[in-house]
Image: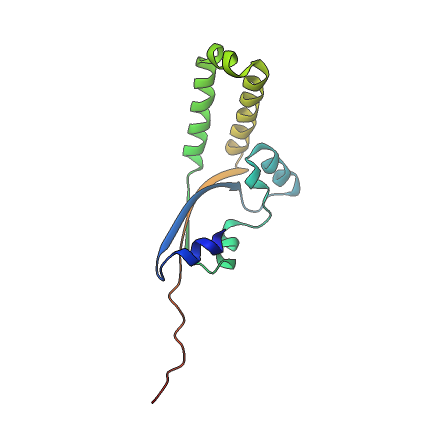
Length: 135
């Protein structure tokens, strides 16, 4: 997908995306926990920076938004608790309870520094200069 995004950009154009990912330098057990407690995309084994480099991007920047991720997760939990009766009527007790347990696990993983949310931005490099042709 990143290669397709690079092809769509004009040379020198930038792309950006927010993603949830495992923190760097995790133990095997911590990585398993990040995969279990985060969204399905967290299971990728290659860091986003390496994926961007492999797709041909340069000038890669990363900004951490993990604190906002934790705040959003807390807000979801609070609102689901505040509207529990209505949500149970819509989805059933099992779905509501399961979703809240998933959010609790996700929040613990964020607070423990295992799950992160980052904004990545990168540039499509200009084409390489070809050989100079003389007439």
